[in-house]
Image 1 (cartoon, helix red, strand yellow):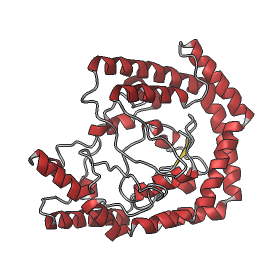
Image 2 (cartoon, rainbow, N blue to C red):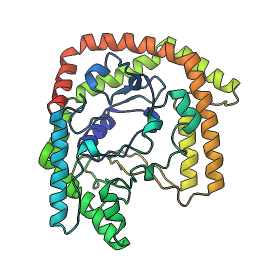
Image 3 (spheres, rainbow, N blue to C red):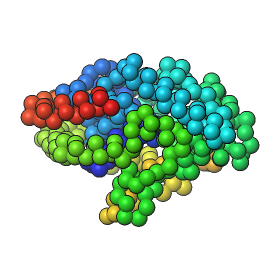
Image 4 (cartoon, rainbow, N blue to C red):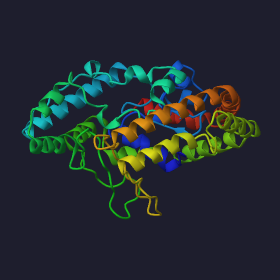
Amino acid sequence: MRTSRKALAVVAVLALAGCGNGPDPGAVGGDQKNGDKSPLAEYMGEGFVSSRGGGGMRIAVRAGGGQGTSEEELAKQRKVEDATAACMKDAGFEYVAVPPESQPKSKFNDAFNLPEDKFAQQYGYGISTIDWSKTGDDDSNPNTKIRSALSAKAQKAYDTALNGPNATANGTVVIAPKEGSGPATSGKQDLGCRGKAVEEVYGKGEDRAADFKKYESLFKDIEALQKRIEGDQRVVDATTAWADCLADAGHSGFKKLDDPRESITRKLDELTGTTPPAGNSSGKAVIKGPPSFDKVDAAKLSELRKSEIDLAVADQKCRATTYDASYKTVQYAMEKEFVDQHKAELEAYRDGMANR
């Protein structure tokens, strides 16, 4: 998925608002997980990925910025939990404030920490092999137990009170702006008690959205940088070598590094009956949670998962042997030059995010 300037801003603002939809399987693994930050990542934060495996650049910013979980940030997260609990009490529901240090890890936390080759062997790309709609389920969270004890009707009311009228059962939120209102972050969205708590601690969503407009020019330059990296002849040649390697492994027809992953996504969409939102000139966007696999044909899903793992393993091996080193050489050299030329803007972005 190519990451445009609008997408960069939307992702960042949604993450700040606490409306993220969970880990991006396309970003699992990589140099940053191993502590190897590119020159640009030093300024854009730990959520920044200039994908050496294709897919463009991703920016994911936590509510407190991209500079690590400081004690100050933990204190803000505690305030959000306390405010959420108070709001839910006023709405007639029980909610236990869970301190950030006590938050349970994702059931796939160990998987996300696997080396890329091991992850591919067990989970492929993490598309059909992980039911993302259930990654938030955790019986150790007292609020999961509280919600589970309610009737179906009461659970829906609980979800609405906690995350707003567009909340889904797994805690994600569907955001569909009104006609002509622009990106998903424009216009007032009711995000329930959690959204109100985030606003109390971090400020209003529209203010955060306005903050990111200051960096529109920087995002534009980063997008152009990615195109220059991908257009470098060394990367072009490496991409051709990668495609030839995949074909030799029995997976022909792929020309771009995103193609294998996207082919699995399309097949999963067919199984789940999911229709990706179509783009349009109005700038509308829909941010929604992943589909559940509960009603998917089990045999067909099993077949797809095997196909995904086989493809991902071959893909990872081919990238490692034909692509990664060339891409990284070009990426780091161009990013260093970019940092030298845009240092003031990058420092302003880094400091602005750190001070949120």
